[in-house]
Image 1 (cartoon, rainbow, N blue to C red):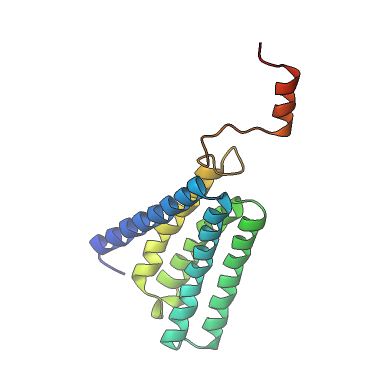
Image 2 (image 1 turned 90 degrees about the vertical axis):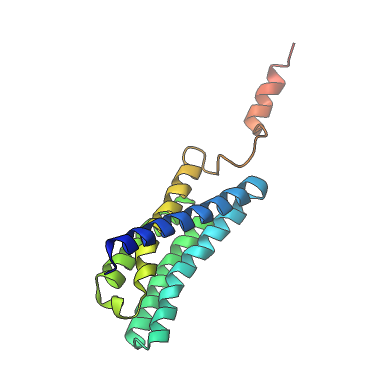
Amino acid sequence: MATSSLLINYLLGGALNGAILALVAFLLSRYWRDIASRALLAVVLVAAGGFYVGFAVTAGAGTGWVTLEIAQTGVLATFAVLGLRRSPYWLAVGWALHPFWDILLHLWGPGHSFAPEAYAVSCLTYDWAVALYVLMAYTTTGTTRFRSRRPVTTPAHQGHLQRHPAQ
């Protein structure tokens, strides 16, 4: 385990990097379509799991470990697809759960032999910063509330305007 100052640096670095990803996702949802933001968050979620596949292969950890890491990446990919096709809250779930894999298996568990400590620790704050962004951005609206300053007109709203014309 790293000294406490290195541990704090890993956590702060992870939080900062997670905030940067959240900012990029925010800007994508603000100036492009919301799906661009969600796609970015989904791709990076799968990549976060995929790094462990690379760590296992590079370290020669064996077929069992590589298979386990591929399965973990598949679970994250499922959350990513659900986050794209269904509710963005699935992205938040994937991001919120991934640090448990990092910490329990790769920092404290047997996977520490091949996974970099800095990656496992910084993922804790990185992933939770992104999960928090998703929760904040999609709460109460179902789509990012930061998307546009234009008023929303729905068919029901338009009908209301037609029934009560301005005087």
